[in-house]
Amino acid sequence: MNELPLGALFGALVLLLMLSAFFSGSETALMTLNRYRLRHLAAAGNPGAKLADKLLEKPDRLIGLILLGNNFVNILASSLATIIAIRLGGQGAIPIAAGLLTLVVLIFSEVAPKTMAALHPERLAFPASWVYTPLLRVMFPLVWLVNLMANAVLRGLGIYPDDAEGNALSREELRTVVNEAGAMIPQRHQKMLLNILDLEKVTVDDIMVPRSELDGIDLDNPIDVILEQLEQSPYTRVLVFHGSIDHIVGFVHARRAMQALLEKEMTRDVLEDLIRDPYFIPKGTRLNQQLLNFQHNRRRTALVVDEYGDVQGLVTMADLLEEIVGEFATDPADSIADVLPQPDGSFLVDGAASLRDLVRTMHWDLPIDGPKTLNGLIVEHLESLPETGTSLMVAGYPIEVVQIQDNAVKMARIRPGERRLLHRPD
Image 1: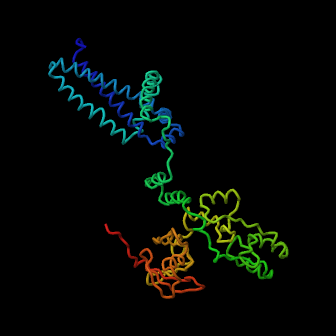
Image 2: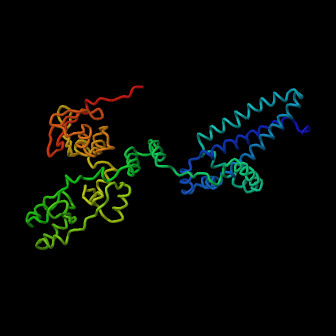
Image 3: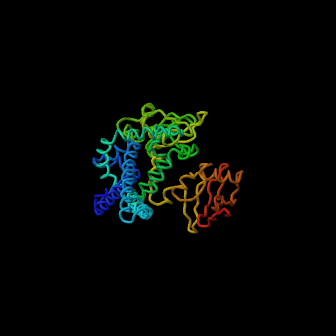
């Protein structure tokens, strides 16, 4: 070293510092790569992404290789700095050289390259993969030996590298990813994705048409009355029963019934041949599971029954899809037939209106973790059947009972514009 000119020593020192910056920056870049984007780019054929993905399959080997190179060049740089200091100022210059080298390494070989790598990992990680892939093959015996000893130390501490958790995202983590996607995902699509994630939290009880609102055809009626009901029915699939909802026979497709009526004389026997057996599902079935059930059974309509087999309501594929894509209406007030806007800014709401529908379409912050209907919410809050004219406050919303019918709230007035926000004291 004494024969080498100072210019060559300074040049070698600069080269070592550059190599140190490369090792430090590429380590941060490779470790901060978005693994899902990396796999997408690799599947799309990006050669640098393919190499990076292959290297990250064994991160302990990659880290071992990078640290071997980084420590080697840093130690060599320290030795060169010591030699240069001795030649320039003798033994007394060594502490000065050590301090200057520490500052230079910290700024130019650690902080700057790692910051750049954290901000633009792909820009550095993909080119570095072309260097590390052949280098790992050459240095594999030494890297393997280093990893063997390092893993032995970890096992002594009760840490087993083979038991490392995967990169699978939980439902809440995936929700965070969707929320933070920003402009990359249109807001409507973003909301649909979040609704899909929420399907597991919602059951058929929350979206079904309750038993009290079910309507259909009574086969005990004269055939003329039945045909008139079929012609006037707003539904494609019509519920059919004997006497009452407690004796359901099945469903009949109104369009097929009308087609049969045109082709031949409609009789009770012909109508009964068109009836399809009912499809029953248990109360409390989660929507994500019911979506699969509809697909597996090739059905679009199901009757919800309780543990005693009594019909509680009806749910359709359209009801389920609305939980994902939203109501099939553009005006929120028109999307719920049970909501009538008033000139004074209040709304007359049918007591049988679904709370989930009110929250989703009217954007009212009503509690939905208890009763399913507005009537149920009012009765639960008062703990008794109210009288006409009773006023109450629920979740800050002024509610007035307008009409009582059949021991239930038939109509109530809600004034969302007069809502009182309830704040907890700090």
